[in-house]
Length: 107
Length: 125
Image 1: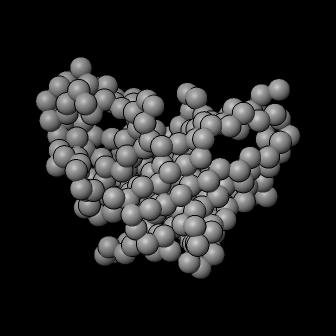
Image 2: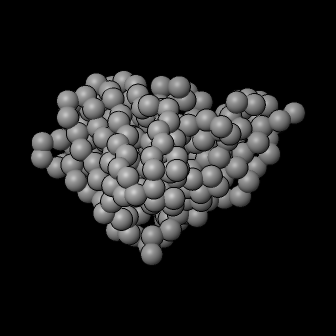
């Protein structure tokens, strides 16, 4: 199943921004979230029900409801400006898929 | 520390085949899957497939089924991605990433928590 994200969002520095990811598989499978900056490998920033990898600031949080997963950045900073991708199971438990990606601009 | 070290950049002609390696260190290789992901210039992330080095189980994105082969050499702690019949649209940065499926009530999740730096592949005549 496809995972659909909004293409772009902007946020004032210090404010809160939420990125959403929608797909049928999210009704019974959690999403993971990745930050992607130019020239760098993707970085896992949130996964599962409530897990943040070591070293990821606690301003990053995630949630899930129905067919929608969300990543929230509270107190966004300039360093958070990047593309964000959700990732989860596809139709088959043997396949996975990325969302379409959301560009976050911090003003 | 956990590291995934990928092989160097490649330039290929259309119709040729590609093989990229990913050498893991800093953890028990057989305890995690290896995934392959690519990103073409200006495009999004594209999941290609995964393989479990312990069981040999693997899965491919439908788009790549039949043209991509994943393998591992557990004695070397290394995973391989092979892509045949290359076309210009295969020009991209290819990443390997370790991943694992876990249950967290009430659902499962799959987390890819360590990545290689990427291998640039250019397909051009």
